[in-house]
Figure 1 (cartoon, rainbow, N blue to C red):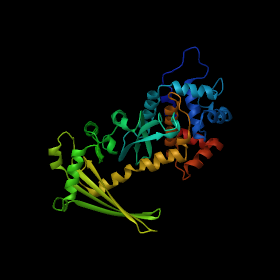
Figure 2: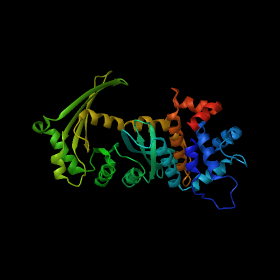
Figure 3: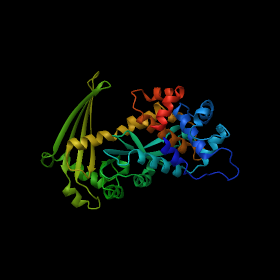
Figure 4: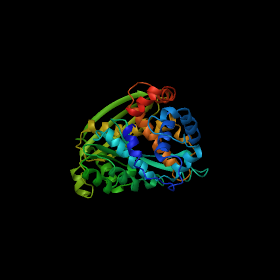
Amino acid sequence: MSIKFLEQIQQIEEPRIPGMVTYRLDEILLAALVGVLCRAEDFDEIEDVCNELLDWLRQFLPFKDGIAPAQTLRRTLARLAPQQLEAAFAAWVKSLAEHVRGVVAVDGKTLRGSKHDADGKGALHLVSAWAHEAGLILAQRAVGGKSNEITAIPELLRMLELEGAIVTIDAMGTQKQIARQIVDAKADYVLALKGNQSALEDDAALFFADPQLAKDCLRHEETDTGHGRIEERTVRAADAAWLAERHREWKGLASIVAVTVRRTIKKTGKTSTETRLYISSLPPDPVRLAAAIRAHWSIENNLHWVLDVAFREDQCRTRKDHSARNLAMIRRAVLNLLRREPSKLSLKRKRLKALISPDFRAAVLTR
């Protein structure tokens, strides 16, 4: 927030009736941001925290009428058009990292606490773009469910400056128009194959299953140990000119990749083997492709897992109208702020320190 984020949220259109407003919209959004930074998990806690920090908050905005009550915070974020807040967020991130480098992982997450029914129906599903090297969330879009990610991903990509980046997406996003959009943005792609593009997947699978065809593949092997298991990965990459000729609608297709993972449980000695297939616009360099594929999973470990553990996102029961989506956007803004703070403290301790230390809180917000 920096001040740049404050400038962005001040451009958001007021959703409430003119003349019937006591608390300014930018004050409500700033209070939500600071409250979540200081460990608040819902609107009641945001009100409590910000009432204690009111004098400190007035260095940024006047807060002439004090902190809006929780009901006003809840009602305002429920009515606020989330696309505006998401656009303000994306513009702010672009000012932090104007040129995205390295891997941009795109993946979805369901906010389980936002469900309306016991069977999970109606839960909010968000698709995010994650910059692996920078450790920043770049943008977010909401969809009706995982099956609707196909419509959200192109909108998400249009919000980003992707030139020179490598975009990684799981099988749901392996679509001709998405591949074309990435290449047209002067970026590269690594897209997973898993049942959604059967003809393409079958051709790739047959290639790697044929010993004569696969024998000249470039290979890279690596081994990891941890969590009570040994994981051996073999990455094979091959030129896909022949595949691009058969599937000309896939713009930029240059290589196919097979990643075979052999896992061994140390305690029992039990092993399992799995092979995953990918297509890419990158040359068939197995080391580079392996790094991109592994970087994709950082969105699970460094974003989704963190939101659930450090921010307890899945436990949040906020769900009325747009409130869950807007509060999720606030959490992601806070996560970006905390990632940019250079100390070695855990995210949990950074949030605690932001609550108790005005100097640390100011440093996080204005960095």
